[in-house]
Amino acid sequence: MTRKQLVTRTEIAKMAGQDKKHFLNRDARRMQKSLGDIAGLTKLGFCIIEVPIGSASCAFHRHIYEEECIYILEGTGTARIGETVLQVEAGDFIAYPAGSEAHDLRNTGSNTLKCIIAGQRLDFDIIDYPDQERRLYRANGEKGDLVDVAMITRRQ
Image 1: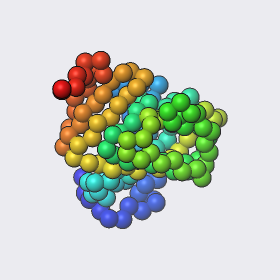
Image 2: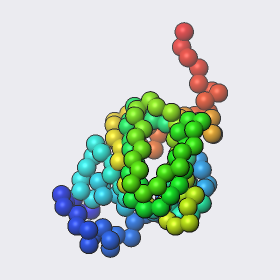
Image 3: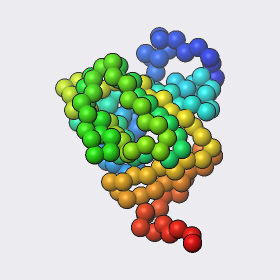
């Protein structure tokens, strides 16, 4: 893939995007254009996503070390942050600092939910999936090791 520092709006509009589904949530589906990858960013992920009506953008999760954020371009939905469910719409910005509560985003509107998602790409992160009671240990861009939280033991 050719790396370029400027990706024009015409090029972005012509991009097909990738149909992404989350391996832990069958209701999580989005069309994703990874602009950061095209531009050669390695420490920051920057994507435009489109979430179909009734779908979630991802599985309910939290990053222990990485930060991420979402800016809603079009549509409406709900952002679940911990136990709280918030109504969101175009123009809203959602920040997920490292170590904050688990979160997800769902399209509850009547049109496609279109967002910008940006997040760190650290060499190591731990991602918790509370709904599935799983934890993912990821290092060096690999898919990582998924474990049942019940199997984690603490050293004494």
